[in-house]
Length: 414
Length: 165
Image 1 (tube, rainbow over the protein chains, first blue to last red):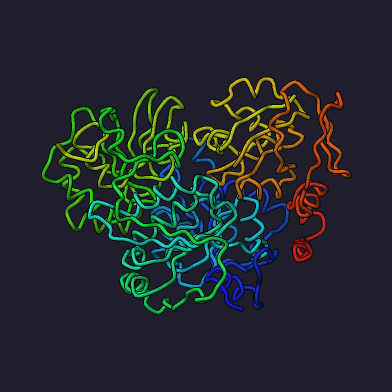
Image 2: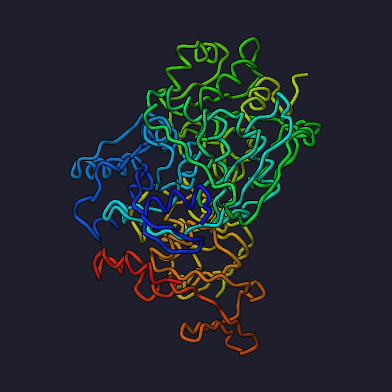
């Protein structure tokens, strides 16, 4: 029977041909938790097990609030450290969990289980990557298994001729505008088409990352030469394999999405699917207090490169805080090597240590009452980045950099 | 009483990230809807219902969002639809999450839920809703959650998943 890529990967994992709607027990190749979700997994774990079943598959990353900004966070991390010591699991602290997974662990065809909603990110490498909560990750640590229901797949075929100023971020914001925040709830999304084929892995990661904002169980891009080049570049060429859907596989829905007419997009407060053209709100001259460039959505070297090109010959707007948070140490070191970080610092930007940073309002740029932040991250929920009276707008790194120069929301530098 | 919420109530609104840095189940009561609905934590009572629109519990995977409502003693969350991870976290923790449009129910109406007949009635008898609760939710709920089930029957009970329809 013809299968989608997601059905193939799940079938391979369980050892028989699954069908949409089946409840199955998978054995994830990677089981990931971070400093918040792992903390809440400890007590569930102790309820059902003493030792982890699959030590080598477990990846614990401290990224959400690391280094810890307060005693509470420090205490949570201390409890996780004790658990990790007992179970002989290393703790990784050099970047955002999803970025670390794609840099070092994920390969095409594997099944990733992560205690974080943005786990679908890893699907950009041709993996099935599903987000769950702390109890489910505790069960997976204890048993090596996780129950899932085989999802329907929505195919999003991205076509047309992309303008130079249109990025994966604009494309996925525009898809969110169309599908809304529950448009792919319980479903898998497969991104296909000529635009996706031309995207490098960095851009594909932006698509799969924000598929979580449509409620997707997982999001995936078939592996190809771009995937192989990315893995080669990471020194992991041997991890590459070709995996794609059968041509006659069944999709619940096929959406043709032409980007030819697209202009830069912005998600306005307080929903990710409330998206408008930047031009539509530019004339309001909304004054911005903080610009955040970073996150698992847009904190990679390619994103910093885009920002650098806009910023480096210019001057920041008066009274603006520009916070730049590379997604990982590898990204940070590359940006350092290329001179981006020095340029950002000389401009007056704040370059923080790698991690989630300001994205979730725990440290590294918490917003005050009434403040406006423009961010390259994935969520603009009320209170997400600090005060419930603050406003967050989501854009691409290019738009974020332009706004850092103008001081108000715009897509032009005039 | 019934606490009514609109569409797209995300987990950042239920347990905001800044307040989320604790591991004490009982203390979660104090942060439920702390900024979005400040009167909630002071007035919510054991046995109250949450009645919501579409996509309840969207956003972050934080389990504290489910646990905080459990700590408050919420009898059931009845929403037009739930976000996937939130629903899973309800299954894990034995929190009854029911997909049904009950948004016409008023805040002050007393409700009776009959699991056997899968009906939700207001006590004045004006309105009765026939529910469809999936088997996996019923089994999890009856056992106090998937986690409790595995704690009591051993982790091999996970294999029961194959029998669910």
